[in-house]
Length: 127
Length: 204
Image 1: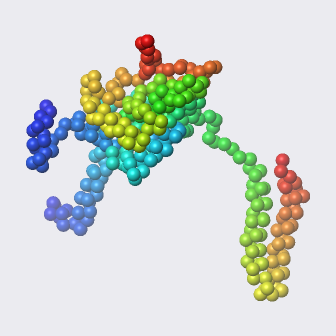
Image 2 (image 1 turned 180 degrees about the horizontal axis):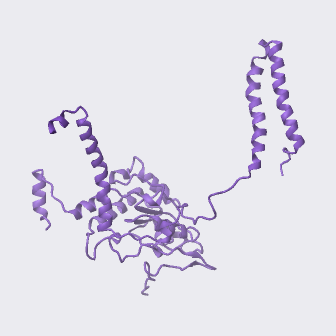
Image 3 (image 1 turned 90 degrees about the vertical axis):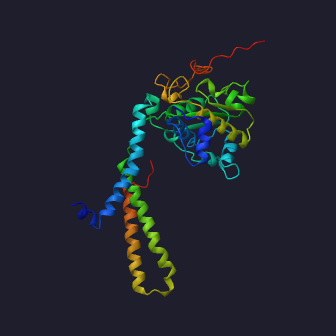
């Protein structure tokens, strides 16, 4: 059985894996054992506190944002995407036909309609 | 039983190295003292210079400045400790894992320096935390910091695993928490940690 195992092509890999595992785990185990046997642990409230560059941490980390901010995001997207499409359009403007101009006009008008809708809804009033 | 010093050198010449757990432990401790990345004032510039290629603190195993007290062993108080900053320094020291050491670098850190007569500077960080090595100078040159570091290494080397001379972190009775002072009406409260620092008697 032994020779069968040793002749397996993966045998050397298994040995290497075991050695690598031992190489990593032995120091960790020794350190843990050393801590248990020799070095007494002395936890306290300050030591276990959250590290915040020496200051005491204040408040809650779970800050909530108003979900209504999505409107700002959408308005931003209107201008942002518009600029992304308008730039190559402007660069290639002289070489474009009537069809491309109409398509771009429709696109821009659609976005302007969205802006007008948002304006009418009062989203642009920063309060 | 420890091997005699002469025999040890003789064996070393033959290629046989003998040691004790204590020596191995101290060698490991002194060769991997990681300082905390923490500078307070102008001395910090000298501390930074010490870590750079010209002075090369890495030769002593201390090149890894850790940005968190959890991973650091050594706190170099590099500069003026104002009374506003002192609670933060003490809290950071508390948050460091044992074994931990402190080097008070420069006139301000050891005594208040040129600001000693002022109202807003702590007259030495050793009022709140135990300092292992004090270095005078304003600021101390990088060589002085290296000297302090070597002194700390010698101090670590001289400690034993058991008995009176054992390091603080191996002593279950040694305090692990050092009270953080708070801003009082006129001064920090308390003005000093009585267990660490006593008012020196001035003989006139």
